[in-house]
Length: 196
Image (cartoon, rainbow, N blue to C red; front, side, top):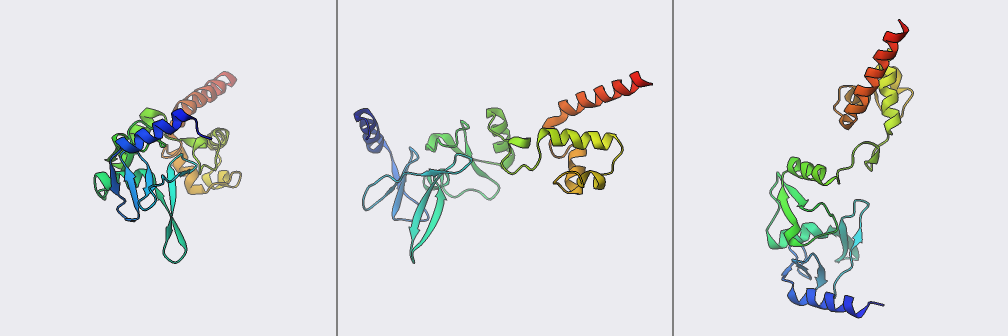
């Protein structure tokens, strides 16, 4: 059960919000506060969350089909217009759950990635949802390469391709590991010099 204060806040938000028709489905409206409601019932739709914390609502389509749409995309599309082809929607404060219009902007992919890095919300390395490697595995790649194994030989020990290992060794992937690689290299060089 909602607390009276929560009900009052929600009522205030609905009264103060500006509403516009959803561009792709005129049965729904979106507000500048990041909410979606059905026009005929005026009921606010409760979104679900993706693993990345983006808010999604599922719309019923003709023929008994359903379609999931990202709330942030629908809000900015309704109030600002279609996204330019070279841009994507950016959450200015880094909070993917905050779909208020004042928190959304169209930005280039590069600018959006830089903003995520500034906020600390960009997942790198093992923290990335599609990563197959751990930090320890990347260090093992560097160690095996330093020990003279080829990329093909290294790929037989780990669950990644030879080309991916090459990209790691060239610094194209896992480049956030630069400091660790430098420290590891120095330690290896010092160990070899001491043993001579």
